[in-house]
Length: 381
Image 1 (cartoon, rainbow, N blue to C red):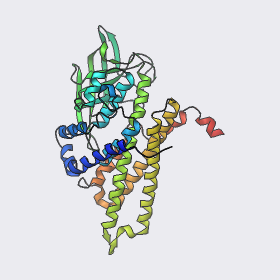
Image 2 (cartoon, one colour):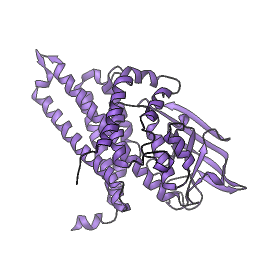
Image 3 (cartoon, rainbow, N blue to C red):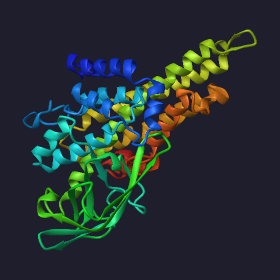
Image 4 (cartoon, rainbow, N blue to C red):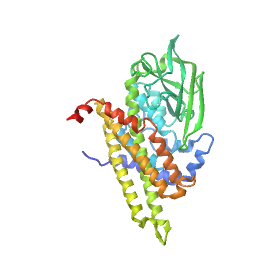
């Protein structure tokens, strides 16, 4: 298998890296975080101009029809630059639309950067099980009536449209009976409570009270959204793995530079063997995470659902472990400065901690990996 990136992929990554280095530095990012919206319209316009918003959108809708490996190199740079724009939320939403079919006019707006999306999926009781849905959509004249609440909707208040998972049938935690709806964020009956998260990004709690969803807002078929949701969540987890890899790379490099410059007992602390051993352990975690993240990106295109699930869960489990180890070690090696808001290391650590808990923690993905067909038999053999 060829593990080299194509020239087009490298060009996308290089363009994004140069923009971040030139116009999206650490102090600029801090100012954006503390702004009213927590995002930058100028930064979003640049992402669209660079083609990042069009990358995963099909060609017939104004995009480049990029696959998960194309997105891998972009999300790496998003992680390295600690970009807080609603890119991940919008790309996850675009994947849901793509899998559901249709909605070409919406995808065209996404590709051009005119529309941001948010995915209202998680609920108070669901934790990491996105099939645990209490929000219900009851049939009514001309469509459905939605009632319920979604929690920690990433960039929910910054989105123009919401993709909402609802139960139209089946038991509360069943894959069957799930329907997906696409609704404008300003639809009557929708209330958004916006707040800043641990890592400086934005999320919202979204309340639905007698929200009318017309028939045209249904994505796919009624009750058939479970498979779409499952595939899209794997896609999202793969994107997060790539972002975490980029953040770990940047944090590792920053820690190494600090060890080379911080003096103690008349010498750089990087000369102390005990600290060299810790950096070596961080590097091993980083390289193992890189291999697993790339494997997940490749397998996201597999037609074998079990294989896709195994690869993504194995990658997310390993990335979650690596993110915690690399983040904690980096903070300790920076000393007291490692937790200050003025140092990038603290921000990388917080972002990695948030990714670890987004779309499944280590325990969730380990259990999911074990549950896939063939695991018990292979283990016994």
